[in-house]
Length: 306
Image (cartoon, rainbow, N blue to C red; front, side, top):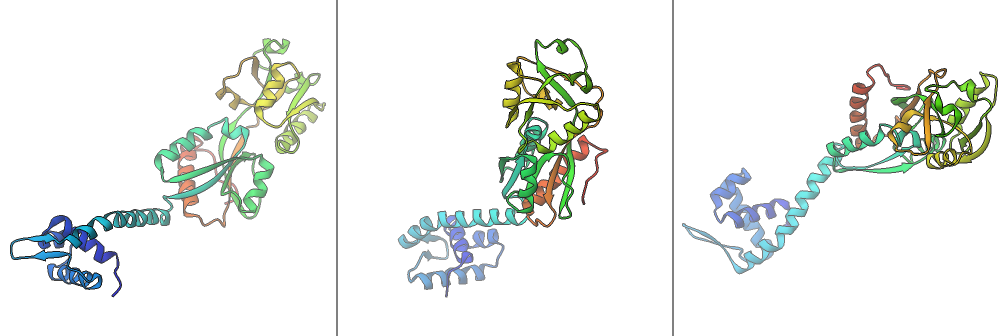
């Protein structure tokens, strides 16, 4: 006869209670069934583990050793079972989450913190990744969900608008235009510009370039940076001005002035995008939390692409 968890649980309960009646009641089985289980265990081990009399039950020396040895084993098994059940329900595991500069400087950190508090057994593997690279990573299943600029309209993906911001211009704090409370994009046509690099910021650049062309000019780009810190650093030293998202208001920045662009009324969307064929239970849990949070914050927003 092979030992199984049922035998170990039965002996551990009797060993702790030293009473067959109470042990059987705790295990919710009949006392004769419990006695038979203990007998099977002793027969398999080849040594008596308990001494019984009409008044008391005691552990033999072999029983004391066996009880000590299995305590850690049953605890680990119970923990493994609990974790496995959580994983099966999507309450434990790992999720690969990509994000862009705009996303992480917006409402995403607060959302991730709240999700982590609600689901502490789910580990979020956070990966900085430009929007275009996220497109590829989702289709290649190297990330589970991405928070990116704009929308990704692909037949195999689903998305929803997670956050919406507005376009602003970032200027050196001593720039003459910083004296104005609001600006228009057309007022910047003679300025030098700082932009994110073409390989990392291509989607955002295309949008801004189209808006500039609609106003009769193309931005004079003097320097580029791979990330937001680099862009702000170049603006601070006076290299040029930058078009950015008003999520910059969430970041402490000295040496720059941020002004809204009154003629750019379109929203700057941050979308959550995932492959709809991804059957991860953990992703399903994440998406439930995401939809609930987004519905409260953006009640007018609707999913895109299913």
